[in-house]
Image 1 (cartoon, rainbow, N blue to C red):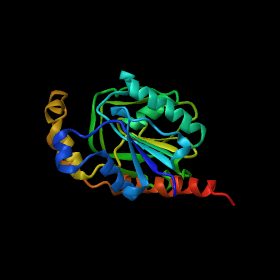
Image 2 (image 1 turned 30 degrees about the vertical axis):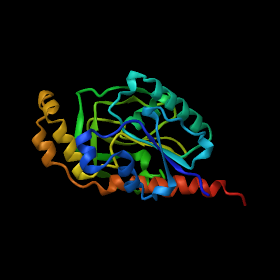
Image 3 (image 1 turned 60 degrees about the vertical axis):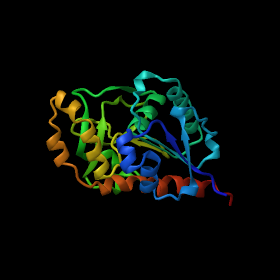
Length: 247
């Protein structure tokens, strides 16, 4: 039996969104296009223990309403696991909180994004460093992605390659090693989910001087961003398994 692909759950969708659209594991399963029987969800926020990295085929680290700078005990334990997983070159893909947690674990600096919250569907620009990257080289020069975050990676870990940026965040897509990448944007979000988050945060956005109506109207499908999840499975998870098979 093949090793499972972990979904490391670091939070959950707000109740009204979860009731209508499901929750993080479902969104990632649909984006990854991996059968339910091949996935193993580990809810680290609720205290689940992570298996040794060599007992899984890869790991996807979800978003969260928590903040990496809180240094919560479950989060710091997950950061230690990430460091161990890097030692065995485990395929990993972090998203939003997972993106920030990977950078924090590997020596980067995470804190609040200057200028406040970034939310909505925005353009992400592929950088020159992405031209020869296994994932980023398949991306167009600019593509749309869904975003909702207050904190960000302000300084990347040593040796990290920055593959894409947005107008407000220079670290939208990062590569830490041969099989480890992360995105600040949400490839697992649908347009409907993005709209639901904007509705939920409308009061906060208004108070911060970001009228929610233009953000809501600007939401659009993001097929390129979504396909990055499938490309991760194809190029890194499947590729690593083939590499490790005995001759």
